[in-house]
Image (cartoon, rainbow, N blue to C red; front, top):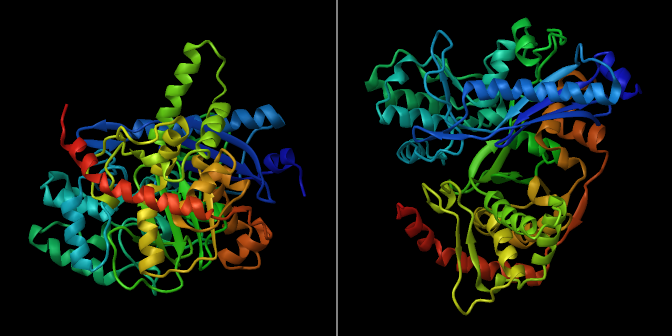
Amino acid sequence: MMDAKTTIASGKAVLGIEFGSTRIKAVLVDEEHNPIAQGSHEWENQFEGGYWTYSLEAIWNGLQECYADLRDDVHKHYNVEIESLAAIGISAMMHGYMAFDAAERLLAPFRTWRNTNTGAAARELSELFNFNMPLRWSLSHLYQCILDGEPHVKDVDFFTTLAGYIHWRLTGRKVLGIGDASGMMPIDADTKDFDEKRIAAFDELVAPKEYPWKLRDILPKVLLAGEPAGVLTEEGARRLDTSGHLKPGVPFCPPEGDAGTGMVATNAVKVRTGNVSAGTSSFSMIVLEKDLQKPHEMIDIVTTPDGAPVAMVHCNNCTSDLNAWVGLFKEYQQLLGIPVDMNEVFSKLYNNALKGDPDCGGLVAFNYFSGEPVTGLAEGRPLFVRNALDKFSLANFMRSHLYASVGVLKLGNDVLFQEEHVKVDRITGHGGLFKTAGVGQRILAAAINSPISVMETAGEGGAWGIALLASYVVNNDTALPLAEWLEQKVFAGNTGVEIAPDPADVEGFNQWIENYKACIPVEEAAVKFKA
């Protein structure tokens, strides 16, 4: 095989770009699917006009800065320019709402998955469809705009997700990978497309409004993994690479959501496999072998990038509050004049947490930076709860915040495993919670009472996952199904390092979660209090 420099110079490298909540990341991979260069750009959402959003300027500046950082990395390590690529893939945070008129103008600020103002719409649509419609899904946002009488709705010509929007601007194609599409509205498992019966039901529901559009007309086209999804246009090349070196004509895979790329990056697209992504938000994805018995408000039914049904438990909050407390200890260390190594700070605090009581000594934490639909909170307040008799130690304090990072995830997965009796052979973890070796794994294993694996490659995250999906479009000569292609061509039997649940940890987490549920009224009271 070619070395990395030759791969890049000959246009054989594949590019994956993913827009996460706090970081945009680009990964360049070789023909063996190994990462050979990376770029990134830090960004943050803004709370404006009552909504969590990112501006169009932030989106394009972020993309261009991320790609420029990738070019710098290539120059530094290989002294070569990126002139062409074998394929490109775009991924981003799922769900949300980006609506455009016929002149391709954004009609309302981008509303991200984090917004929880869509309760009325989600309830009505869930009843109409006999299907759990989460608050963050794109159709919930559109229908809430209708319920609120927002004047822009009559002018909607197209609406999509963040990944779908970026892909459209780079290729001219209004398409979406089925995994990301399944976060807009329900998918028909047989046709592997948006559910026509539910589209018709929605059109009938809003017919009295006499809008000039029908739902099908304003949705993107659904594509499966492996299907070509357009090529980089001249305008798209200029948008991506402001230096002007990248040539148009590069093939694209269907744009996907971060849930789908997480499944790919952890080799979890087979039936009875699953993965847990734990970062700013967290979610678990279990590929189902049969339909659930009934809809559950805590469980979303989405799909793998090749259309298999998946039970998803999505939590709006995960490590943000945990990171904030670690930042406080960093400040204390700086106050003492001690040099700070954040990897060491995380490692010391996390590993010390394992010395705490399995039930955290009675301490309870809520990590709700934003609302948490799984527990019925439209808004959030980070909160730490204890009484005078609890065992207040640093180990228990940190352990309670580690538990909190996956506490809501446990509630949803308890429904899956205990009520629906879903079976799973392997669950793989990835994301920031697992960077400190062994700690996040052990905590998650206790939470859901299941062995948890972590792979070294999972640290590459969704950008690597979407790069793999892009490679699947152009490097699948034998037409293997996605699961087999990943198993044979990418992972070659690597299942990572597994940690089994410790019975004492499981019992302790179960005690802690009962305290947690008993304290939810305290969190509700904190939300009601307006300082």
